[in-house]
Image 1 (tube, one colour):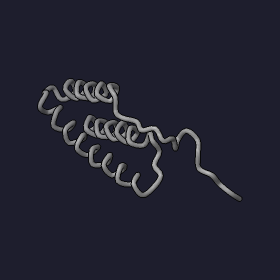
Image 2 (cartoon, one colour):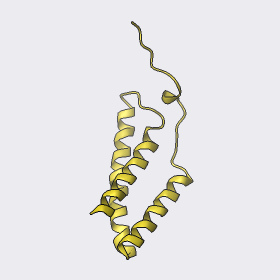
Image 3 (cartoon, rainbow, N blue to C red):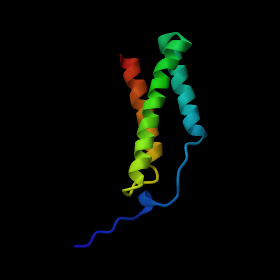
Image 4 (tube, rainbow, N blue to C red):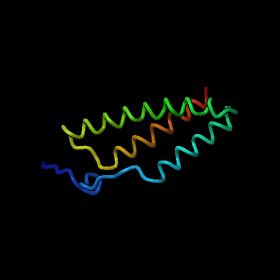
Amino acid sequence: MTVHVGGSAYGSTKTKPGPSTALGIVIAFAILAVTFGSLLTAGLPLLSALSGVLVGAIGVYLVSNVATVSSTAPSLALMIGLAVVVTQLIGS
C-alpha cells in the first residue's frame, strides 16, 4: 500500500493573523472586563494568555522547519489557545 499526503490542508500558502484575530482579542477583553469589573483585572490574564499563545506559535513555527505542518496550524493554535485561556479564567 502506498499513501500520499496532500490536499488543501498541506497547501504552500501562508496564513497570517488578520483583523478577525484582533477583533477576537478585543471581544475577549470586553468579556473579561465585564466579568471581572476592572480593566486592569481583565488585561492581566489576557496578557498572560497572549504570551502563552506566542510561545506556542513560536513552537509551531520551529516544528515547521523540520516537519510538515499545515498552513492553518498557526491560526488554529492561536484561536484555540485564546479560547482555552479565556474559558479557564472565567471559570476560576
